[in-house]
Length: 328
Image 1 (cartoon, rainbow, N blue to C red):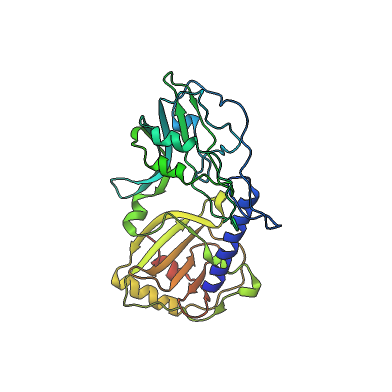
Image 2: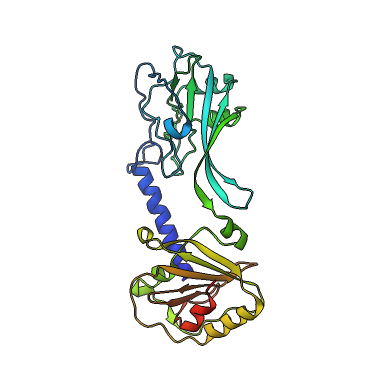
């Protein structure tokens, strides 16, 4: 099962990279005929200055992937726009006092922009390379303001692979930013998930692992080591997110309950034929190290999928006793 999952992840990663490569100039790669990618042609003329800035959240939002809108076809910065300060909009996870984490959009302002302007005025780098890599380049969400508060988003100088020249992100990271505002975009990790050691989201591996008839786990006896602490994480699957669950509750199982779960798992019969996905599922794993992981559907088919660190995955049928033991 782990080999299957790893293969699936690798396949999806390659597919994602390929899709990104087809999406436009934000990702560079060698073309089918082996030629290097070229930077996008910048729009000619002077950047159009806008007025009425409100905030990063309103005027410079990022996409669902956390990346700013592409600036590759915008005009380059020229000498007609007198830059007084720069604003950098950064989207980063931030830990809360309760242990949880939020994704926060921070608006930072810098008035010392000498090094930044020098980098932005560099020409595109046309130096030939043997091949362009496929990684997503870091691109700052950068805005430039004049003394009247008008602002532009300039095109960045690019290399031959269509990525920002390294001098640009280096200059952006060197800015002395003063925080103007912080906006919580969404919660990344709840306090309950952080306290229990669970993740905020998890895939329903049971449904994914039993959907392909050619890779069905074999029936057998499910076992877990009783010497290590056992963490229980339960996830609820929203109707619009079939296959991915969000944290519901989690805890380290007390010793007696751990032993009862272990005994019940070892007595389960082979799984009955069933299709479809559960609306709630549990994940049982070693709390101190990477090892065997067991997934239990808490409703619908109520299948149990054990994915040993060594050996083939095993599929069994949960019963009322096991489901009761996994309740909060």
